[in-house]
Image (cartoon, rainbow, N blue to C red; front, side, top):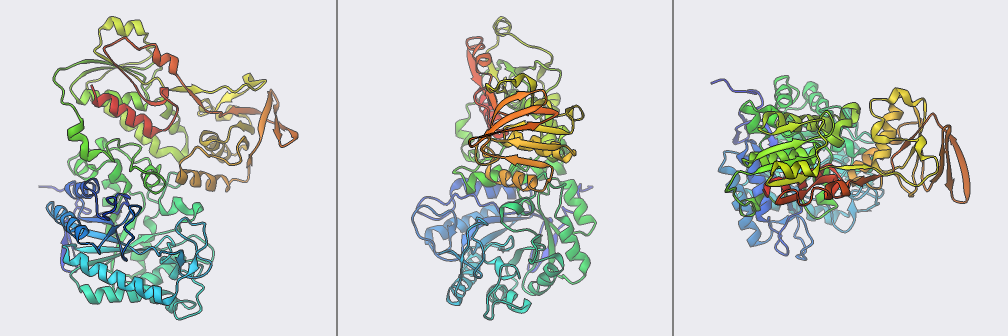
Length: 639
């Protein structure tokens, strides 16, 4: 039998273990320790077990803190120091083994009490300065690493992952930029690697070849004075004596480099693979090398292994977007794989929020409860969905999969809604791919699609539908600015950029205004963004906002003016007020990005047209792709 993707799906021996393929399910910190108990919740266990069930060769769970944690219910990491936690951790490993995968655990060695490698280093937020950790505390953490590794081995784990990258506090020992110590752990290259070597050496002496030791490191920090690729190879050359697998990651956790540590669409696909390839080509790294960083398909993964660029691929976000990525791909159903849009909602929802979520997978976070939540279908129903945007398409697909007869009405000549613009922006290629995925799924389904159809409430009533789902979206908000008729809505600028002239003023510096401005600036236009608030892109999610601002700051022809209120628009430009002064800006075009207004009245008009009525997406409130998909799913699954 011919094996599809034979290179990435081929087995490999690592120490005393044989991995069934080259796919590492990279760790996700779910921040889901059980309140007061510091062990993985059932939802967290199900999440990692599913990765094994769906085909990963090595499943890395996250994570165990290497020192005891205070039992205050606030901690997100699991403890290896409590008996009830050990029971649950052992169970997790065994459940992963059930599917033929190997179980690994990330050891969380983030220093407490504001410690970093040396004065001048930054804490995990990449902004706040820390204080130099004393040697006595360093030794305590070292002992914690060794104890945790030994205990995990006894609990049945096959490996551990140690995160020594991204300039997190412990990784700062390795970098000449962040390690300014004057003792035996700072200064020279040998001194800077000393602490990490001591940790790895002590672990290896304790566990022998019975555990896979995997490390993540920044092969290049992309900061002047920091680790560059040549130094990264040199570090890996030293650490390989104790590490079986080395992940060639990069960057630092500073706001301007999040798009490097967690690649986004401001970078091309698979932007960090060349780092692993450089490790391999150097001929100096004998450990296995892992390529990591937004690898989203088995086709790409197989090419990486086949071409010798890496020995393993680590996949994280793509397995959140579609946990069945591997099994779908090897069975020839690649077009059914839900693409990750690299929005970082999964990251931000746990680090800065309270509930693990994904923009394109509405079941994440509630997956373990679905069997009890979903009411089985007892009769086939006739369902109308109004609106062919993301919420409408997802609602229609979900209802159709439930066995209902679904008709999808769209007033324009194509599906896509608010996602249509994505095909025209170079840094929205993953979102465009998701739009295409939804449209293709609708085409493959039994859904009857009616384009160019501005269906009326009476039409729905007369057709005798059992249920109606309304997802008619939102429309641009028009602020009460004199001369506003001389402006063009931001959403309408895509595809007609050449007609806007060379000098553009954008009213509104939220996410839409900033992304539109960045897009136009990259096309060579001089762009000025006027924002009433004191900061740009305040409505964007934390990490995406960092990425947007970082990219905007690279564009010399993109001018940002905050705390500025536009008071008038005329054919040749605008007037705006900042403080007590009024200023004039000339412009060939004025673009309006003042927010979106939900089509509430349009949605309300369909009330009473069918026995069951749902609304979903931006017609409820203008928000995000995530809320559109989630509400579309909720509507479809409840019919």
